Amino acid sequence: MQWILEAVGVRKSFGALQAVAGTDLRLERGQITMLIGPNGSGKTTFINIVSGLYKPDAGVIIYNGTEIQGYPPHKIYDTGLVRTFQVPLAFVKLTVLENLLVAYRRNRGESFLHAPLRRTWLKQEEMITELAFDVMLKLKLDHLWDERSSNLSGGQFKLLEIGRALMSGARTILMDEPVSGINPALAHEVLQHIKNLREQLGITFLLVEHRLDIALPYVEYLYAMDKGKVITHGAPDKVVSDPRVIESYLGG
Image 1 (cartoon, helix red, strand yellow):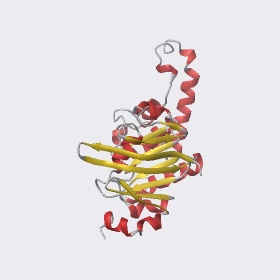
Image 2: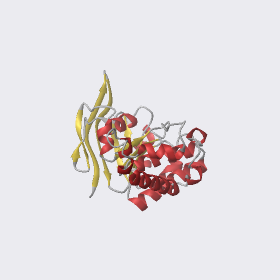
Image 3: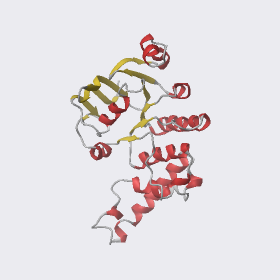
Image 4: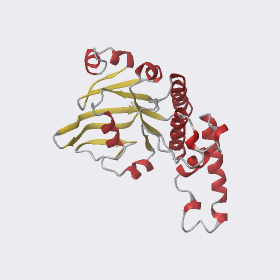
């Protein structure tokens, strides 16, 4: 089995509250995995730990063969492990194209030493712009390239966040409620783009999502959390029919 991410025995407490209580989770390379659970089950805290926003109290997190627990967010970002947020964080005064361009890492034109020497970064700038248009084409945002991101719909905002992750060189994207707050038609469009990126580019996705009726058809593997622990995992139809999941999450 080709695991791109392994989290073993991850724990995190806030005072007397144990938000993540010894969680194990593994992502297969190039797969779409989803993490579900009721509010307060520890899902977002777990994502925050993996992406470096929180340091775990215990446990090991291995990404692409390297232990990353305790790394700061920017160092995890540099490994190709990128997360998006429930509320998109685009630069609202910039255009779609500009939002993508600023997400590219190690742009020579932004270097203090290289910026005055145009010839040292001009070709790279052209390459980055071509890459941005290719990303927009994949996400069907190319017709909006010069639109300020503040004018985008909720679904387009979600796609722009995925695009920014791709521009950074992401190989694994952690998405916190990618279809929250958007209508079902646009939600299916966002999820279809995620599926296409997995198929075309081999991107690995971990989705944290509540809208199971919309998201489940796009998911290949499912984890369920409750009270800070993974209570079951496996094929989506098996997990959602598990009595523990029905009791804790589906309100049965």
